[in-house]
Image (cartoon, rainbow, N blue to C red; front, top):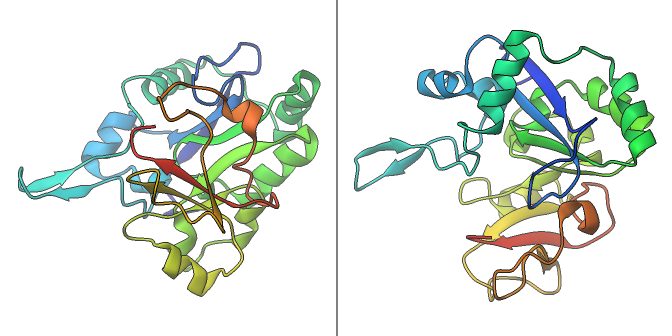
Length: 231
């Protein structure tokens, strides 16, 4: 949905427990190019197909005098391993309804976009999966500035805001949409409209997982979520 490039959504965690310390035991959806290894896709700029206008893809480093990738996702781990498994044919192909029925039976939530932006996947796929699974999700999208962005995505995803796509710009387009942003410290939180991500306490100790918290569901009636850098 971003540039027409070939992509695939890889859903893991249907039969095994997720090892993701932050999300807890949720099914994980990685969105990758289906024709090229994730690292090579980044090197060639083809990750635009799944990351679009996310400013964390490349940021100018004034010291190195070049653009560097600052995304927190380590491509050497899950995205690479899942892409290789996909190429080997290790993933069974199923409809969104079939996957949803398994998730419903196991009572699992969905991390929609462990890597890649959920907007890259056609909205119909997400609707069919969620209607069948009838479960919660954590999901964020940077693509709300794109001319072809479908605001129906906000049923599931929160608007991801940053130093480029700011809260102010979001409010010009979508005055009521919930957002998720990063702050530099604990004082940079508007207590009237925002709540700090409760994942870790002030000492940096993990106290709750996404599967337990469930605040980052786009259409949830709750405050906007702020995470402090380093958490």
